[in-house]
Every structure is written in C-alpha cells, then in structure tokens.
Image (cartoon, rainbow, N blue to C red; front, side, top):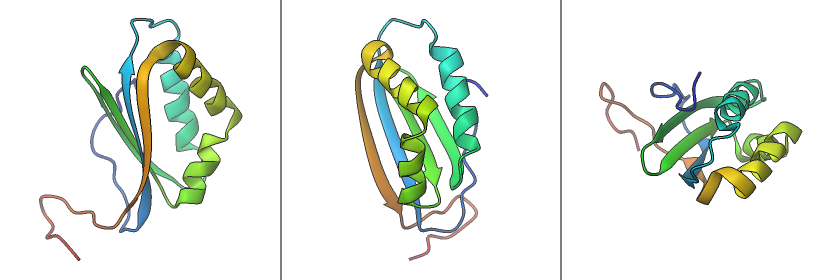
Length: 115
C-alpha cells in the first residue's frame, strides 16, 4: 500500500466508527512515506480494524473504519502510532484535525438508502 490507500473500503452494516483525519502537509517529506506505510500495515492488524480510505491534494483526508470507538481509541494508543503522531505534529503537518463519528447509514450505487 502507498500513502494513499486505493479504493473504497468494504465495511460491515452499521453502526461502526469512522476516524476522519484531515491534514495540511509541510514541505518536509523526510521519512513520511515509510512511516505512512508502517501505519497502514500496523492498523490493519489491530483488533476491530475494518478498512481505510485516503486521498491527498492540497489537503489530505484519511478515514479509518473501526468496529467501535474502543477499537479506534486502542489504535490511538499503540506505541508505534504514538511515535508517528508526534512526528506528524512536529514535522509533517502544518495543520490537522481528527474527528471521530459513528456511521449510522452506509450504502452504495447498487443499494437503496436504508433508514
């Protein structure tokens, strides 16, 4: 996987938790791509992980999906992730916002909206 996860994540029927990370990058690329890859790989092994979607242009938006808020909270506290968070704050991001939400509805082009 690269810095930008390909495709649309396959998620189960709601409810589940979405962690939305919106960021603006600094020009410093030193170590960013390998760390991003490590975080994608490590997150995918976490209990409760469901998938990720990511896109970047002027701003980046990464949405990770979790079985529940506890699973997302546990990921936030993983040691390697704490290191990446600190490096992001200190070096890679000029601004960012993290939002945590519960998904109540989820449908695609071949499904009707439920609820």
